[in-house]
Length: 171
Image 1: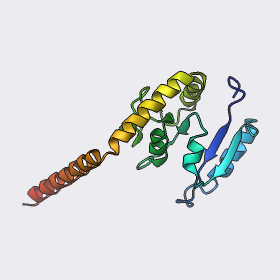
Image 2: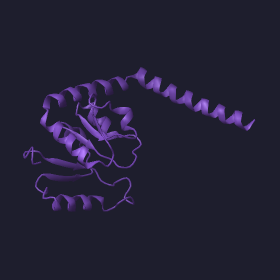
Image 3: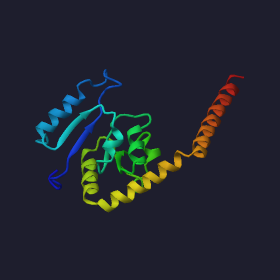
Image 4: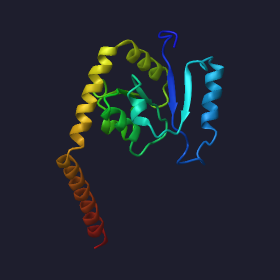
């Protein structure tokens, strides 16, 4: 926020689906924002149902997981809306994002790399537009009926191959 004093940060979501996991996570983040004197630029919005509207209002989505995430729905939603994404270089994000083409990837848990990437993205609106456009194109191509059918067929083929291999081992 020092390099872009007009920048604002929205923290969207909650432990709505897994409250037993770090139930006080939002409290920890709020405390950290206060300690770092960022209380005036960080807004905590909690669980939202109007994500498409929020996506139209942001320049970048940051998904900085340090633990595995199965699918990364928020990343796909942002990419589909043409919003560039900064995400951890791990898990499902590796299948969704081509670094510097359809988004940006940073090492999980590397706060300095994440901050550097956020500043770089904030300072380059042209690159954000390029990445957002490419991300929208890629996600649109993945959602076509033929692409979905091909992915489903590939999944079934892999499952059948694993089953055959297990059966041969038991014989």
